[in-house]
Amino acid sequence: MQQSTFTKTTMETLQWLLFLLASAVAMPIVIGSVFHLDGAEITGLMQRTFLTVGLASLLQALFGHRLPIMEGPAGIWVSVFTVMAATGSSLSGTLQTLTTTMIFTGLFMFLLGVFKLSKRILPIFTPLVTGTFFFLLTVQLSGTFLEGMLGLQGSSETIQLSKATIAFLTFLIVLGLSIFAKGWLSSYAVFIGILIGWTIFVLVNGTSGNAQDVAKFALPDLFAFGKPTFDISIIPISFITAIISISNVVASVVAASQTIGLDGKDNADRVNNGTTLSGINHGLAGLFSTIANVPLATSSGFIALTGQKKKTPFIYATIILLLVAFFPPIVTFIANIPSPVANAALMASFVQLVGLAIRNITLKPLDERKVTIVGIGYLIGMGTMFLPTEVFNGLPSIIQNVMSNGLLVGTALVILLEQLWREKETSSFK
Image (cartoon, rainbow, N blue to C red; front, side, top):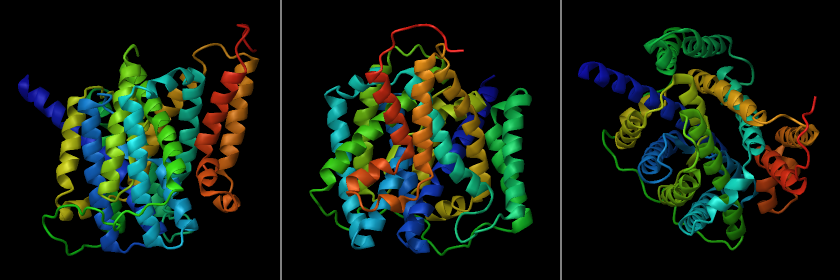
């Protein structure tokens, strides 16, 4: 019995670890491309990303919201990095300013959490709002995942047929095992799918990366982007980003509570504690010059897909990821997880997130008011996602960061309309 429990915990830990890695490995490559970093700099950024993701997730699970929710590079911060790269006078100076921006954002979040102000926004996250957030999140990221599955990332501009075939095979394996298989095959669908996909990829395409001469052990660099620089314009950007990041905390806590089967009565305290720890984690991201992390709602999709609701394997996985960051050869090896395979596994977990979005939106009967509010949020939010980022270049940087984010625009519209257009009737819309 003890052996069986040990084996189960080990397999669940490995599966969580693969999910953490698949979710963390892409963003350093994206940011490295935006800021024209060389191979060694990208490897260093990935090393620091693994460190902060592992440490942030562990701190949240133990002292923050206390749920098995991965902390990962935030989409809002990827937008901020990209916009500031396009508008800054120099790439190195922009990275130094971004370091300060993340630290100030963390300070705002820490204060909002400590003084229990973050829970005041919890009532505005109705099922209609959270459902919209989850749905727009899947729309926003599904394009990125699909590009990765088709081999369109990097210099490739046309579909890579062999890579795309392996990616969709991985997607079908993960989804098929989670739905139709029984017992351990269903529970470890993500783990099995990634291993099979990675093996086939190597057999067909060879190794997915080049070996690098790196030290066997190395401490992640502090302030690798350079000494932080201050600009008064970062204050409003930091505050707005803090509020946006709190919405990620709320949405992730609500989603995880629903998926695990908790009654939600502790969500207010979880949001406060989670916001406080997110503030600390933003400070760590600034200290280690990486992309700031927030709780990822995709964790709920992973939990629903695999049925893994226990926190212990998650904690073990975060500790392993934290330790891996000190061994560059392992980081380099992990960085070679084929992008099509990693994106396919993440896409499979998003299927469950779409279901969570639909369940939230239809939790109560849809009347004409709800349909209109959701319709406006979807149309404008998704429409914004298809606009080129250059169209916002004439606006102040703070407005660029907000208006270029379709997820934020759509969710904010639903919140605003729900507050202004109060419900007065209970008749269903048919």
